[in-house]
Structure formats: structure tokens, C-alpha cells
Image 1 (cartoon, rainbow, N blue to C red):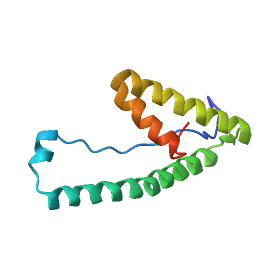
Image 2 (image 1 turned 30 degrees about the vertical axis):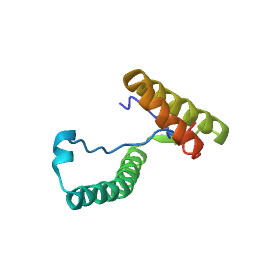
Image 3 (image 1 turned 180 degrees about the vertical axis):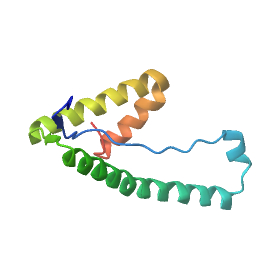
Length: 115
């Protein structure tokens, strides 16, 4: 017995990969070591997009092979969901980090990278 026959293809959100490091340890590194870590972090961001895109495709193929029908929202609905998702993420960030998050959001909005 199948419990579900349909799913909606999400058109919003993203998977984030983060690297955390103690600030005192970071500051103790020489500039060459910091630069290596910065460049590695940039590459991880690039590689993670391809990794998670491939994973999503594999999951979708599995679901379809097992009888799931995938439906989609219209473009205007998808755009609205993306905006609502982003606004929710920013709200949480601002609740947790206050002015720092507000300043980051202002920078992202001015660069046309967010809502």
C-alpha cells in the first residue's frame, strides 16, 4: 500500500554548507593559511551545489520509479514561495544576530541577491 502518490517539486530554498572556526584560532593563522582556507571554502560552495543537485536528481528518479507523481507550482507561485522562504530566513537571522544580520541583508538586497 502506497501512502503517498504525489509530491510537489519545491521551487524555493537552498542547501547551505558552512565551515565554522574559532575566531582566536583564525586570527592566530598566518595570512597564507587563512587564504588557503578561504579558497577551500569557496570551492566547497561550488562543489556542494553540484553534489546536492545530483542528490536531488537521484531522489527524484527513485520516487518516480516507485510510482510518485511530481507536480509543480506555476512560476508566479514559485517566485512567491522563494520570496516568503527568504524573508523567513532573514527574520530568523535578524532575531539571532540583530544589526549584523540587518546589515548583511541590506548588502544582499542592494546587490540584487535577496529580497
